[in-house]
Amino acid sequence: MMLTWSSLRATSSPHLLIDTQVVLKVTMPCEGCVGAVKRVLTKMEGVESVEVDLAAQKVTVKGNVEPDAVLATVQKTGKASEFWA
Image 1 (tube, rainbow, N blue to C red):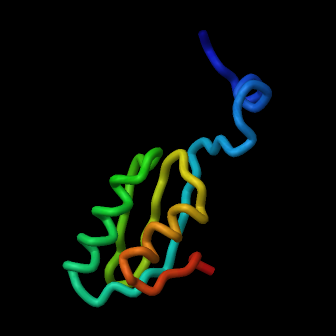
Image 2 (cartoon, rainbow, N blue to C red):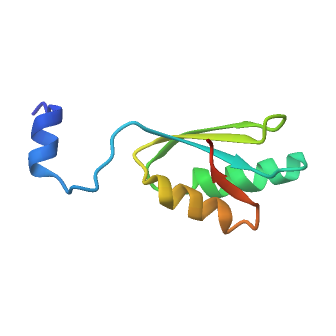
């Protein structure tokens, strides 16, 4: 059975997200911090990829995820984080 966007929309929860990209600014002073952030994000349901740019303090998450849930997960590590402006 092939699902199109319209059929997914009609039959699925209104909270279903497809191919979402979330970009965050996260304070990460070292590679250990990068590892901690990557570790919690890769455990999140729906996450397909996590890219971290330490120099820019930028984290990009792709997958079927809620942006607020991604932000909350990173904040639980104790790292200051916010949506990339």
